[in-house]
Length: 226
Image 1 (spheres, rainbow, N blue to C red):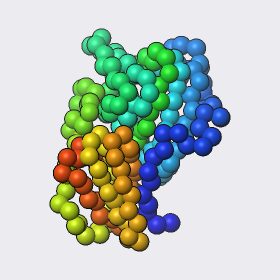
Image 2 (image 1 turned 180 degrees about the vertical axis):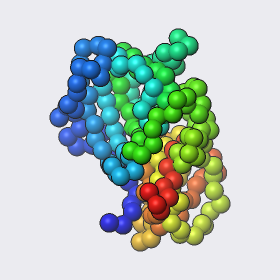
Image 3 (image 1 turned 30 degrees about the vertical axis):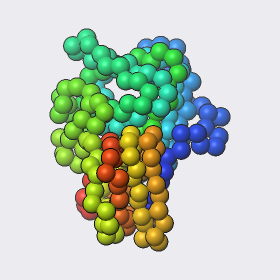
Image 4 (image 1 turned 90 degrees about the horizontal axis):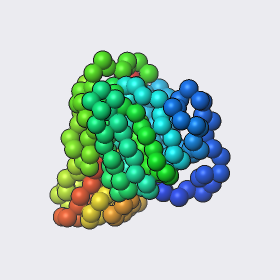
C-alpha cells in the first residue's frame, strides 16, 4: 500500500461503543472504562496513532514503556513523578510527551479523551533513565536516546514547496493559523486551529503554511533496515 495522509477525527463513527479489554493488574484502582480508535498501526516498528478515552483511574506506577505524544481533547490528566513526588497537570487543548522510561503514575480524575502517537519499537528496551527527566509540554523540544523520536514546535514554511517523500512519520496538531498539505494527486488538506493530521513516512506531499502558523509535532524516523 502507498503511504498516506490521515486527518484525525475527534468523534469517529462508533467510537465509545466497544470498550477496551482491560486487566486488573494494569491499575491501582477499580477498572475504568476505556475506548481506543486506531488510525495507524504498525507492529513491526511499534508505531500507533489514534484516539483514546478513559474514566477515572490510577494506573500502576513504573517506568513509562514507550515514547508517547498526546493532545488532550477533553478533561485533565495528572501525571505523578514517582521518584520526586511532584506531578504535572495537563488540560484540554494542551499537548505533551511522556519520555520512554519516565518514572510515573497516571492518576485520572473524571473523563479524559486524547489523540496519541505511541512509539514502542519491539527491539528497543526501556532505558534505565529517560533522556529527559520530565514531561515535555506544548511543543517543548525532545529527542529520545536513538534520535528517531523527536517532538517540538512546527515552523511556518516558504510557500510553493515541491512534492517530496516525507522523511518521517509525523503527527501535527495545529494551534493557530493554517497548514495545507498537497499530495501527489494535487489533493489539498487544510487544517486550522484544533485539527490534527498524521503523515506516513514516504508520502509524496508538500506542506504550505500561513505566516501565523503555530503547531506542535511528533516525528518518528525509521531507517530502511527496520
